[in-house]
Amino acid sequence: MADLNGVFIVSPVSDWTAMRYANAALELRLQPTFLEISGSESLSSSTGLSIITLSSFFEAAFAELAAVLALSEFGGVVPGSELAVPFSNFLAAQLGLMRHHGDIMRFRDKSRMRETLSQGLVEQPEVLALVKIGDELPKIDNTRYPVVIKPVNGVASMFVKKCTDSRELFAALKSYWECDNPQVGGIVFTKDVLIESYVEGSEYSIEVVVVNGVLKYCFVTQKILSEEPFFDEIGHVSLPANDFPLQGAFRAFVQKVIAALDFRTGVAHVEVRVDAYNNIRIIEIGARIAGDLISDSVQFAYGISLEREFLAAQSGLQLQNQSETVSPSGVFGVKVIFEDQLLNYKPADVEILKEKPLHFKELVEDVSPRHVLRRRKLQLFRAQSVEQARRYVYGYDVLTTLPE
Image 1: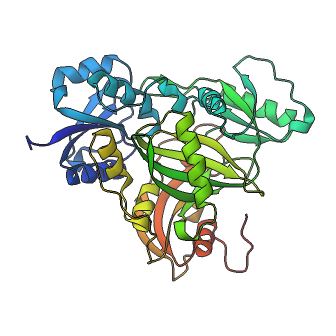
Image 2: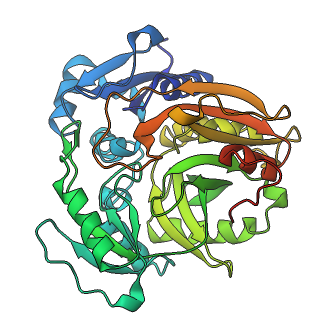
Image 3: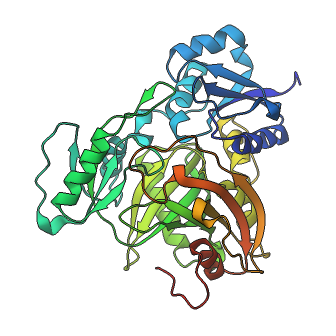
């Protein structure tokens, strides 16, 4: 193994995610080492992976690593989850490796993200107010409702909610401000909240690979959401590039986004909304691979591993471009299964390819009916068409009209 270059994968969310990275690393002749944070470990020792547990996501962790590893043997750092992005970038900077330059919090703090995107003239929801705990309720004209509240550094759409008037807005803010303040790896989630204009329309994510400032791949996933006023993800469908009329527009929009954020190399998960007039607005961007088995779905649909691309990009390896031609063997998607859906009917021509059980120890108070903490498993499936895939995720039969 001495001829392999080391690569750090920081805080992957599960064994499943870690094994995808491990397999991709070995294909590239890289030796993966996984970093976890004490108190928020997600990997089991049964995986056989090389795992190091650090005390926190702070600068002192670098000294902990230097005490146990020859850091000069590592040629890349990859964040395995949303919260790992800032520390991964810090670690890469300390080692002189590929990283994002400038303020890394433009990819985590929604307020800084909005400011940076605005400077790049990227279309996005309008920020009506930034409020902190204890602030008076901002005066928003009744004509501006509905609005959306969004914690500036939250995760998993927790406490993101549509409010149709000042009464609902006050109740939503009060609920968030009164809940326990969670911490992960020493990171404290602030109580700062953005109040934004509501964008009506369909939601998509765009899985992006960028190398040296050039957009290499752009895969579109339709996001299937819970009923409003919440925005919880209940499924995803990988859309065929050759049969999706907005593919070109999405690609051009992503070019604008990565230019505005100075995103030079890596993988990004870009979430957008498209209104009835096909206007595209960015909801947010993550400087990491999407969760929810989306990378599995992309690989089945297009034959391209996002983990392999990410590891290669961060390690300075050049991979040959592959075709983005969609798989001829069906449409691939992911369905989230909740407690009340464990015995749901599955059509005979929908094939379950993989299942990932989920086990959450406890709920956070006041979470929505389809929140991530209420999930029981994820299903990766193959359907015969996009419509059939969407129907399966919704649980609708052929006689029911699908939501737009």
